[in-house]
Image (cartoon, rainbow, N blue to C red; front, side, top):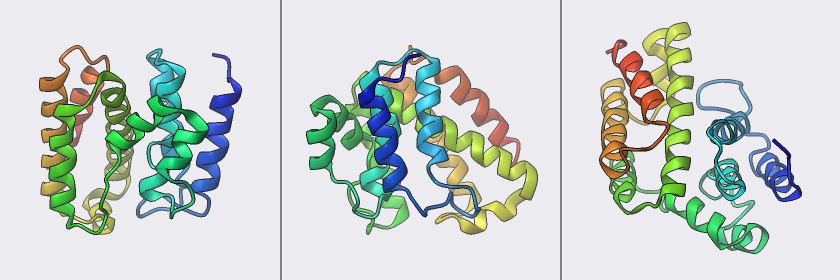
Length: 186
């Protein structure tokens, strides 16, 4: 894969937007998440716009105001903007359950590019959670905004909705496999 200037720029922007952030409950730099989402998308042959959107998918939602939707449109174009908007939570002040309910409902309206980014995001988050559960057990849920049962049910609901919306999604087999692994920790 060739790293085009636009993709390199997206990586630089994401590094800047997430600088100083860590993954929930650990010392791992947050930037590892959007980069791994991008790698998942690259592995399945996603377009450059989808890769960029995957790398930028959290910069407005979790980037502490360092980059806006307008910035994305100006720097990366309308297609990347639409995808990032589709996978972003708009109002982080809402209670966890309401935010997650809205995100689940939004899946029904997403196009394939957004569904790929959403799937890659979920896939990496699940893989990360499985690794943490194997190391720390249920203690890992102490740093989350909802208890274990609700977190696991949320992943189950997300994967079911992704499958209903786009059964041909090439990431579904891995998502289902990770879900089965996660559910063993119930």
